[in-house]
Length: 111
Length: 114
Image 1 (cartoon, rainbow over the protein chains, first blue to last red):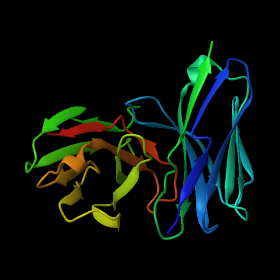
Image 2: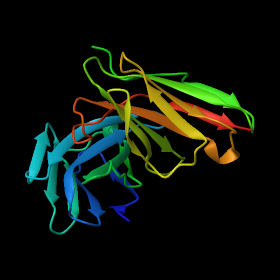
Image 3: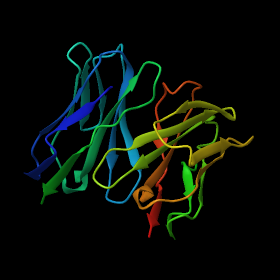
């Protein structure tokens, strides 16, 4: 059974800090991996999609890396802002299956 | 362009009742997936549909069913509701046939079962 873990479970930082959110997944046979943001009580917003053939993707202050062989992905947030406060979820897509979500990292950026 | 739209946004039911949730995908997207998200956890996959055919099913009981219409909109039905069915139900659409493309989610339908 594929499992996805995210560390840390929660994180509170002052504004302006650079952050690293970690995602680990069992079984390296994935098509791609997607990072999402979720505000309380809301749906998921897609942040980045990394194909299995890629090492990283960038969008603005966000950079996501993927290491299939070690079963890890990292989301890097530069110069964090209070508006970045949300829960961040990673979801690898396994061959022959569907996206499997991690439990998320709850981020709070303090002004 | 409109994103994924879901209705209703909130609803309250009692145990044993039936519920129907609706989803309209992004224009041009032919694949629709349903997820259940219990408070404090990540979403869990329920169904995927493409071109009106079921392409994937998660580990949910037969009380859960879904269908996709010719205009690619979709319904999720849950019969004989249990307290444990209380959750945020999320619909996602993607462009490609297999679920290998980027997923785009709606705001969800919050179901409370009393």
